[in-house]
Length: 367
Image 1 (cartoon, helix red, strand yellow):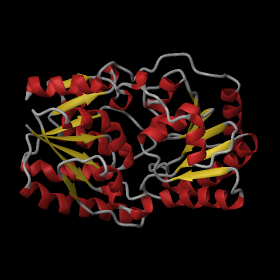
Image 2 (image 1 turned 60 degrees about the vertical axis):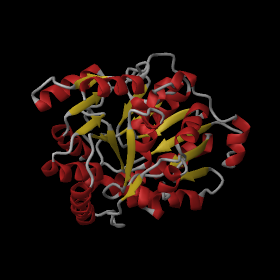
Image 3 (image 1 turned 90 degrees about the horizontal axis):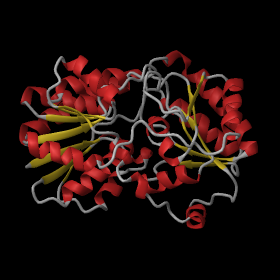
């Protein structure tokens, strides 16, 4: 069976990894990766180089990302991605193509495949993020897909509602948590030395723009900056940089200003890679921001999360998540509350055993 895997960013590639490793070692499959989006961007860490190190037999490379991040540029990037993939799908055929999540680049690649009858298998469909236009892209991808792997039963039901059919819709858990119980972090001192992290407690932070509230992002970025400045007095702060979203540069500029003003209190990371990112989460005292990782994965590491604003609003949450508005006193109060809680002892609603095994079995049975 010839499988294609669409990967547009460090985030989706890290989630795919357990499945890619399993498929790569199964002679039943012929695997080809299709890398595009921020993988090809030097300003976002050129993560294509990480993919190339894994020794895949075939990696297609498609460049379509425009460097600016205003509304016109994002829309133009979408259109350019459609054009590039129209050419790609006309020349490449697969039995099934995996797509994941809700990025606009992913939506564009999938939309271009509709006239060619490309069979898409979508992971993490049915989820809701009211503070991001990704919500629209995610549902577009769902409607264009023939096979669906939801992360919870709730999202499985949502996919059924969107598509009007329960055919080929499966609740398998979050792929990123595959084998999480056997995860071994990088040895602490090696990890700290590698990234020059001081021997103290630290917060792991990721902020992305709220792409539904474009007029508020300048204000939100300032609140983020002022809040992190206060937090950095009590603990070191590691920030993973924003994705290539509309107005993401506003947050990047604020974050870089923080680093310039307080060089010894902040570490900025463009791309950790999955193992180092999970290690950072393992050793972190707290997670702060508005990234899906805090919702999907942090509970499995016993971490509390301060989820800020509306970007993740509507997404099912485990009991480790405390939500607050984009308001400096509210953020500081939530961080203080979480800091005093210790480790989270509850369950992760996104965890199920053997996700990659389940997906492979379903593919072999139904296709």
